[in-house]
Image 1: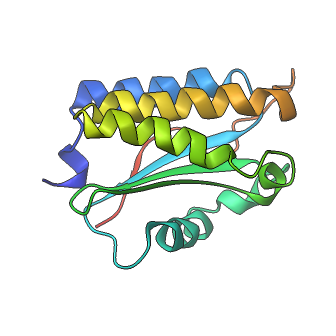
Image 2 (image 1 turned 180 degrees about the horizontal axis):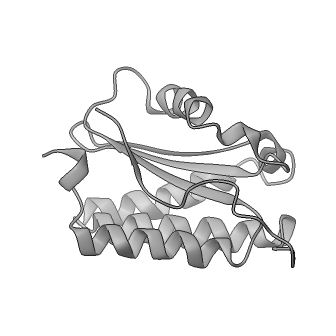
Image 3 (image 1 turned 90 degrees about the horizontal axis):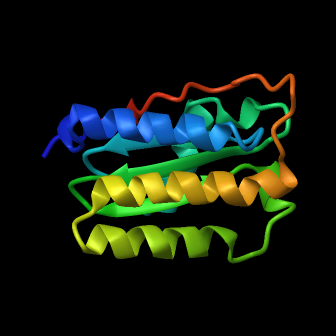
Length: 145
């Protein structure tokens, strides 16, 4: 399975729409990145991608990266320093657990959409959307090798 066609075009559009809907509730910026394989730990790879994608450059340091290596079935969610200063220590673990439970049922698109929606819902308390909010990062899914 190739990361680019892991989700159907319709599912990819649903994921992008979920990102837009979540970002309508928060100034947080959410990205989804898919790739085939993950050498090493998913969290390390996601942190590397976070920097490569320029996600640390948001004004409030409130970017979220949702990462999935489709062949290796490695998944994680990471947030930038601005988020991690404000949220509970188990913030990402709760969202990850909910997502993984859907993945285990074979509901990958639903899991991804749930992770996006839950992230947006949780972030709106600490990072409410402003009237002059600017979309600082692309809402499109990014792909690696």
